[in-house]
Length: 247
Ligand code: NAP
Image 1 (cartoon, rainbow, N blue to C red):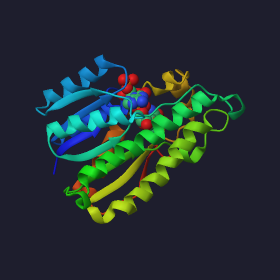
Image 2: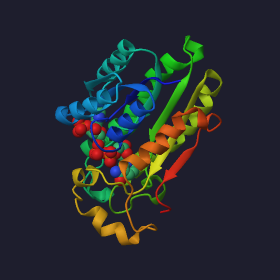
Image 3: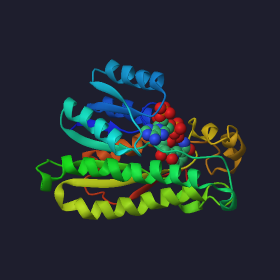
């Protein structure tokens, strides 16, 4: 059923791996990014190298106008059948009693509001209630949603726990309208997000504590996302799939 897929935060990390894997599965791609145009261009080139259409769209998922532009780009490519709500941020380790309002507002706006806004636009296009012909949405949760992030990032963990219940609620809301909504819950994955949160050595520090004694790859998370979007997962709805290596 391929069609057009939007991957938010598709320029790097899990988003890039997902865009490339979805292209291998026959999707055309909208590769959204926030700041790194070079990385987005590399993802687009990789998708095009697989013979699929791709366009990079700069935009902040927490901005309603930017989200409108991301979806307009998808409309120009063809019929939207998949949304991967992947864009997400962490921040430097802090206790709650150190956190600023600016930090909290940024975290909630990008990780939660951004996923809501993008899913809203996807539902408007995919739902049979709106004349669409169905599709799939996959949200990015995190192991932090259940580990809770004490002493490091209660805010991030709370946004991801919010993603979990948003996934279930939206799945039920649109289940009869041809849309399945699921989430993946990655554990420790080898991307630049750890450095962006001021913890460049995080993976090396945690590796020995991980059940499989290794971190996961972005490709391993992408494979779970692609499966959830595929017809092989046709009765899987409202679920959160752990991709944590058993952590
Ligand atoms: P990453 O390597 O840091 O990449 C983040 C991506 O999101 C980049 O493409 C970035 O764009 C984009 N982005 C950031 N803020 C944005 C915004 N406001 N609007 C649109 N795009 C934005 O992250 P990652 O590790 O691949 O993580 C992807 C998702 O998986 C996140 O939701 C994260 O919380 C979740 N996750 C990751 C791990 C892990 O260990 N890596 C574990 C659990 C969950 P630019 O390139 O332009 O900066």
